[in-house]
Image (cartoon, rainbow, N blue to C red):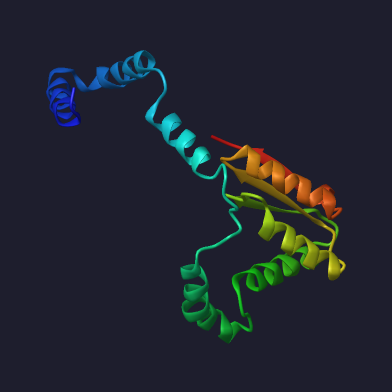
Length: 163
């Protein structure tokens, strides 16, 4: 059945089924259909990043960063976003020296930025922090875990794959 026909059938059924029964019907259709659209999209996303280096940013990122981001950060004394983030993270850690300050990073990938920040914090004798790195791709998080271990930063990281 073509997608256009499928849409018209769905539109007709929506008018025939009482509103209070629609959630139940949706669950039933999902059960019969098997894999949800969300699951399919997640799988495509995982496959898209299977054989590429996620740290290789496109050239447009460098252009945008140099011409738009850097000028916005310059009045505050920063040349890039990492400098901006790590200085404020350091400030929070110094404000609460007796506590472990937790930072959540959603879409952390291989945790390259978080590891960069952790190395900088270590160089500045800041040890009271913890990164919670979350990503939809467990393979990328595993790479981050290896990298953090190689740099002796494991105690500052935990990982949460989600889908």
